Every structure is written in C-alpha cells, then in structure tokens.
Length: 379
Image (cartoon, rainbow, N blue to C red; front, side, top):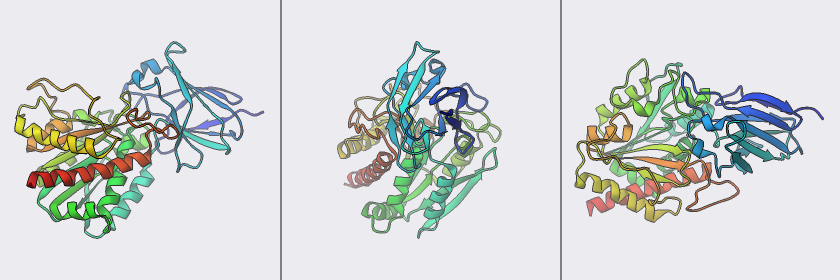
C-alpha cells in the first residue's frame, strides 16, 4: 500500500516531515520565524482513508512548553469544520520527547493541529460580517511587517470604554474563536446582553493582533520574531508595529476595562491573570478586578479561580506585558484571559476537549459577566 502524504504549505500550516513509511510518519515542529519558540503544528494527511495512522512528532522536550504535552490529545478534523480529538500519548524519553497521535480517518484526507485553526480567510469573513452590522465602525489601525491590515471594530454609544483584544500569540487560536463568539453577541440586535452593553459602553475589539504570525504558522511571534506581549512598554515600528498601533489607539480613546485573550499550553483550565504588582496598585483598584473574576466564576463551570499564574510581588509587575501596562497607563480594570489546549479538567468533555464552541460560549459568559459587573458598580 502506498505511503501517506503530509502537507503544510497553507495558511498557518507548520510541520517538518522526517520520514514516512506506509501509514506511519516521523515529524518535527519547525521553530517560529527568527525565534526559538516552537509548539504550534498544523498539517494534513492524504491517502489515509480506513488506515490507522501513527504520527510521531519528535524533539518536543525542546519545545517552548514541554509541560503542554502530557495528557494532551491532538485536534483532528476531516471537514475542517468540526474538530474532535485524536488519542495521543507523550513519552519524554523517546527521540527527545515524542507525541504519538493515532487516528483512523473515514475520509481520504484528515487535518491535524495543536488547536482548531482560525485561518486568515475566516478572519476576513469575521471582519466583513461584523463591519456590515448596524452601528459597527471598522478601523484600520495599521499595517503589519508582511503588509497585512490590522483590523479593529468599534461600536456602542456609552461612555464606559471597553477594549477586547486577542491573539497576540498567533498559535493561541482559542482567542479568535472567543472573539467570534463575542462579536456574535455584540452584533446581534436580538441579544439582550449585546444591546445593553452597546448602550452603556464604547467597545473596541481587535480580533487578531498578530496576522503575520497567524499566517506563517508561528506559536508566539510576529514576522520580526517578536513576542508582542513583551513590547507594551516601548513598542517600535521595526519590531512591533501591531502593539504600537493598538496602544496609540488606546491613547486616543482611553480604557476603562480591558481583556487580553490568550491560551495556555500547560494549565488545563480557563482562568484570569490580573495586574498585581503594578506601581499604581491599590486595594480599591484591585477589588474591581477581583469582583469581575468572582462574577465570571459564578456564571460558568468552564471557568475557575483555583489554578492560574503566581501574582507578581508589589512593584515588580512587568510593564512590557499588556495587562500590566494598560492597568498602569489608564487605571483600567485589566486582565488576561487564558484558555486551555487540553480538555478542561474543571468541566471535561472527552470527545472535543476544550473546543472552538466552548471558546465562543465562554465569550458570551465573559460579556454577561461584564454587564453584571457594570450593574453592581452602579448599585
């Protein structure tokens, strides 16, 4: 029987084929552009119908987050619409750390990815549909190093200034699935949460902060090899034009509430990270963040507060990171939302694990929590 064929020369594709023997392949993940980061993979396998595939991704102890591979199952799709999970196992002692994916497709072609991809074509569809909605303004924030547009969407008639931005790290595709869910709420005239938020707030959304890294198939950096979430103190046109454009727009509009949407490779739950440790921290300032966190925790079992990052010591927050910079710069209630690549141990769903659908539903809960946060503030 002929060998399977593996390809990744498409939007966000990323894999290196080391060898193929029948339905078995040995693979490796290339490094991000001008960077040492590597973790994102996305490829397709052809000639696969009815064959038990064994796909071995090697060298993963040298990946950006080796702790992300134990208890992880790769994402798989045969129609590029529904993404399930392929049984996977990790052995750190084989070929520098090997993830072995086993799957038997019914179709002749199957796609595999670190998380369900969010293509630039889907991004443009998202922008076009939202920009055509009543009361939505499209803002061209700037141009990336690869010449792609950096899109923002603005809406709402209120005075409370809300910024939602996602995918500074392009391989964290959960973030743009979250943005799709948020825009469905905010642009649907029948959605009561969206209607009320647009009455009370001026909302600014950047669904993809890193188009170049997204298209190139990077985990964490842009076309210059820059980690955008370490550029917020001093962004430059040469290294981080995306951050410079977003921060300049924030300076024009002001910020009262900000959520930076991400994914975390190792921690198998959804959680928030705040801005403890900024120079301007006060208990009253921090209480706003903790109040929002408590509301979101109560609203959905897909979110929890037990597991997350360690807080920075007083005065030691890294102001090059967006949440810290925005909280310090504007006095905003700011936060980083993290979602898992693995299944959410707080609320497991074995067939899909954490999925695009759950990202979108969490966005709805985050917006409903924001409305309640505003209500309790007024009360």
